[in-house]
Image (cartoon, rainbow, N blue to C red; front, side, top):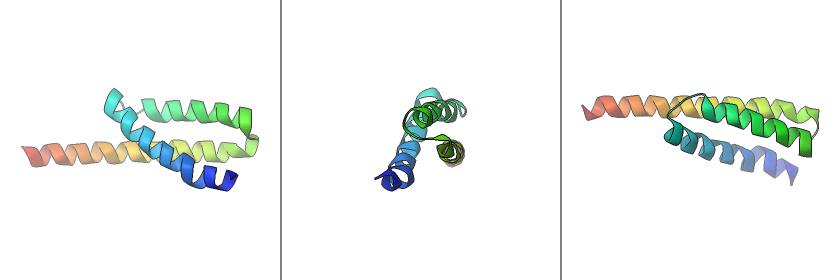
Length: 81
């Protein structure tokens, strides 16, 4: 169950939250920062210190997703004009 949670459910949740977080805040750093803090608490409460590798991976995934969203928005706005 942990395997499914760490490798499939959490990354899918991160992708969705990154999209929604950027759409609501329009700031590239807010959602990755929130994800880092939330998953740090999840690590302390439910997992051990080895989960910190996944905290970093999820934060990087959120940053990458936010950059992709920004890129698509810039390309779409250029195409629109």
